[in-house]
Length: 104
Image 1 (cartoon, rainbow, N blue to C red):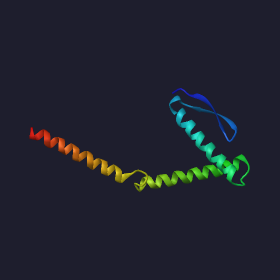
Image 2: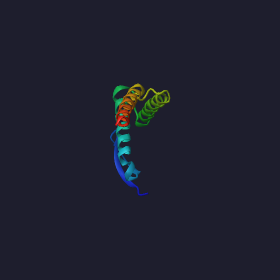
Image 3: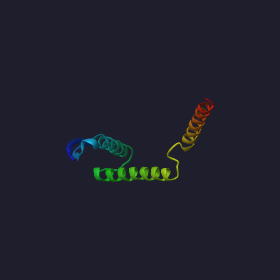
Image 4: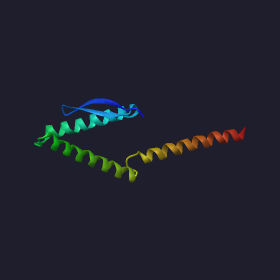
């Protein structure tokens, strides 16, 4: 697996990160998310120091992840009822087509 070096900026600080070409887009998305969270914390609180801001951002993102994981476990993160309704409609259409085919 080939790796490449990617230069990114988080809270104005440059970092050189290694990643595979296949994961570069996801890495850049994660970098952007971390940068937004750290910038938000720096601007909306009296927390100073990059290390403290990073810890607060990590806690915020971890909390968000845990809430999402809990929602997924309880079937809340996906529009379950909409999926069920769509599946019922598809089954009804399929049944109608099969009925027409059998009638021929």
